[in-house]
Length: 518
Image (cartoon, rainbow, N blue to C red; front, top):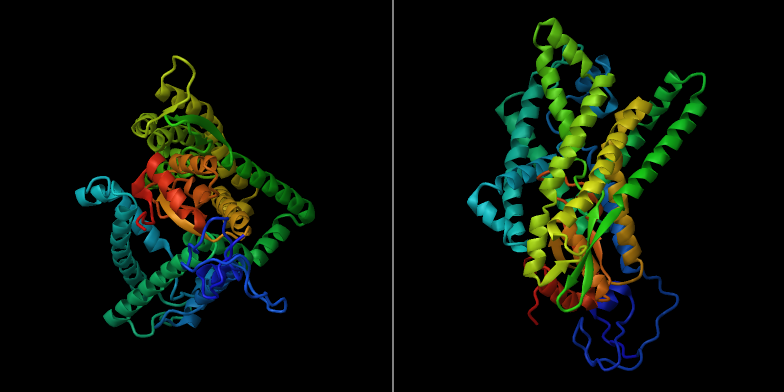
């Protein structure tokens, strides 16, 4: 078996081992060197080297630790002793006793991306970029970053102005030198902190393990639970003095059961068999959670908005209605269940368009393998109709079970937060399993469509090309109009050309992130 003898070969620098090739190949695909039949140097057994996976893992852990350390850097111009006394006097938690340079985090970026994505459905230039595939997404991202800067600046200025109006419990002012200069400096500081977080997320995506935004969201949840653990422990002790251990066991069992349910449902799908004219067989996985988590989030907003309005109307009927729809009341849960089921059907029809799927496959010389005499579109509809009620009830259960069974759990994570954490972990586990095999994976395509990503993976596997989808489960939560979680298709470095040809032939060349030119 021929080997690459070049000590500066990119493959050797990444893995610590010389690249191996099949018989008949004469040049290294990584550096172009002529191959030899045996390794010309013996590896030093005493030399400790890290694999590419280990380097990426340590790199990711290091950046996570860095972000957790950065949040302790205080924002300028604020008297934190006065701020601390104010929140302690009002019963506020320790999380509010400091305002960090990185207080805005990723939220301006995520919000700006959502706004730009909504506008891209209506504004012609943005709309045309959406149709350009990966190259168009790069343009949209640049616009989103500009919008992020403006949004972060406005939010930072608003925070600065609000701080200027606050007075401590003992009369001291929180802002040491109020004025326009303070507001501008704090706004620019918080904006800079937000962009540093975006940069760190990009570094994790490119050089680490997992999708950077997902990893930082996951780290944020973990840090919150860890920092608030003493408060959680105290709450358990105060609420369940006569049986705190028993309630803790019950709490643990319920949590484990919910996690197991989430894993089962999020990994479940129904297969729509596909056959291409050249004989290649694949399938589109229709996930059970076809509408993700937006139905629960939107229902909560739609219910709480009229409740807030009714509370300002001084009438017995309006007051009774507002009280009936407050969290903890049986009518609140009934209204949420009805709303979630309705929106689940509505959002599924938005995210999964059978006509669009059938047309796309027809243009690629493929057809859906449906029962004789049954229309392809109606066949997909029937498959979805079987999953939607199950998925809607699952979302209702996970969203509200923590609230009903344990208010402590709901306060610190919540059902939607738990689904998010599990989805991120599922993505990480798939990536870890793939990269631990020692392959140097390269991104070859980027999608924002969950069914098409699943179809592409099935085609690549049929062709014998190993791959994994980064962000598949997190993206499947379908944050409405928020495609900051793209689905990246990664294949081994020596399979890039083959995978690119498959994508060009069977899916869409616009999603390619690599050039086919040699």
